[in-house]
Structure formats: structure tokens, C-alpha cells
Image 1: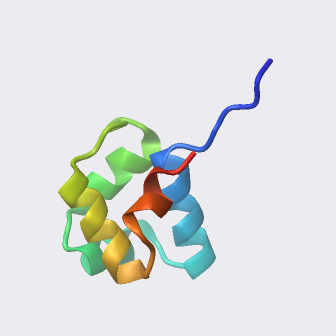
Image 2: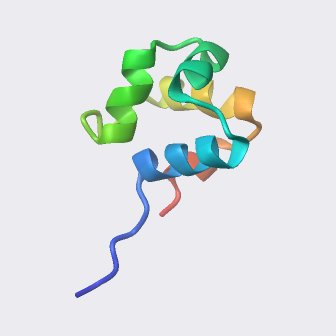
Image 3: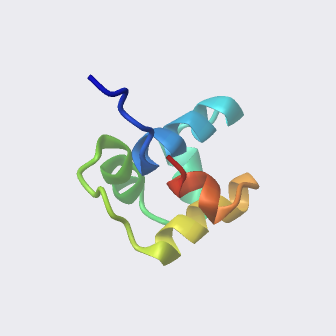
Length: 70
């Protein structure tokens, strides 16, 4: 069985954990709703808009590619 590759949801959670911030703080930093962050991280929104990902990436100091890399 092949090892499952990281996805956007796992990458965002990993970045949040590294920065030691909660979803609520990230949502405020990114100027998106907490609901949006939660849906992305749980996989309910597996393919979020590019602009949403840019809003998340910029304030935490990562590139867009860091969120989508496998």
C-alpha cells in the first residue's frame, strides 16, 4: 500500500502547529472566516480557491506552493 501524500489540509495544519496558532488566529490573520479554515483542514473543502490559499499563505510567511505541495 502506498503512503498517502500530504494534502492542502495537512499542510495548513502542519504550518499552524509549527507556528503554534489556533484556527481562529489563522482566520483573523488571513482575513477569512474560521468556518473556511475549519472546512479546509477537515477536508470538507478539498479544493479551496487559489485566492483563499494566498490569503492563508501570506500572513504566515509561506509560499502558495508550500500549501499545495505533496
